[in-house]
Length: 513
Image (cartoon, rainbow, N blue to C red):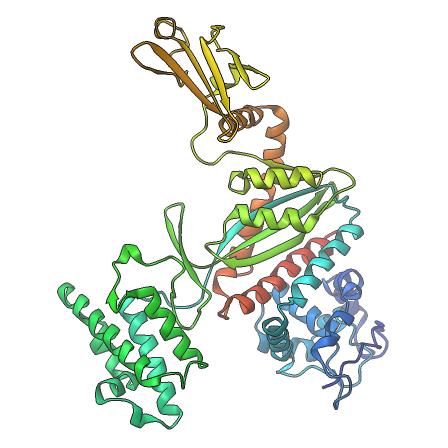
């Protein structure tokens, strides 16, 4: 299939819809079709996707802007692929929105959406380049220009994204990995490699008898049996199957679940271990008292008086921290000529992130602090030239020094004075037989200073602005079903998330008068 740009994009209600009544045309013009056609569709850049097709090999592709536009509309109108194909071919709104009114036969079949997704998926696996993400983010930047949003204030938030794979117990996971490889060996015509016991794993009816309806004291012995069979199967295969996914997943499972041929304790198993062979990228995480199996997404909104547009997003396994997302966002923004303000919650805070932001003329504002907050009284210590001059009560230390390597101040005071001090309850002083000692690290003092800033009206305003981005995770869950995507694997899940992000942006712009 060869690449060809879409040369027919003009809307003409007089060609395909000559038989529409005046009333029908009025209804059509008031629908979402015209805003999408005028504000979203022309911005889709087809040229970036040329690498997905051959230079000259048979019939041309379905126009890229039509396919991407249709998949955005699919998310906006919340329909299935099957309904999308019917709508593009039969619904005047979709044809106007995608500028297909001048087409004779509409070039859109039941395979059109899946073919583009598959090409995008294979391209990213081969090159590491996410063409869709780049385009959705570029569209976001273009929409900020349309809304005249100045790129000087951003806010970000993250959300857990559940994998659609089944949550498996330890025994079922191990059994399934053995079963998948046994079936693959049989399908390859080498059934003779398997012993009678190993052949049972290829029988679907055997799984229930092994994995379910067990007494508590039976589970451990079954786990040991399946682990032993897994090791036997690996030995039988040698290096003949090491390129096959089922073999690789069995090897990974054994590495996760066993050590030197013996089962690990539950607490020894890493959260990054294989959760389900049908979704090898999904990981396990506990957050806010809940358990999640899947991924974590990050969204960055560019904000202005005329609206808010998502201009950056990402999806990683759910062990990826907010601080790591923050570091990536700062790196991608790069050096700023004018100060850029980025607002996030406390989970994005880290000294490295603050330092990197400062180097790039970015004001990273986190609206709370994670962990234990340092006592406010620390800010009342007077420190000059790396020396503690006095304590909050005005007492001068008998001795003071600064450890440059650890970044810690140490000051000693008279014990009797400290024991009768009115600030004693709040002060972190520790007493010995003769002296009272206070140790203050620079990092703790910086946290205390930041905690005091959070109480100012300026930072309260930042917190109010940041709160708005929390609506994005909510709408992704409630309206766009991000926890129920019908795909598995990080690359495919990120692709589906991209269309949902694009749909959110498109709806925001289409709603503008």
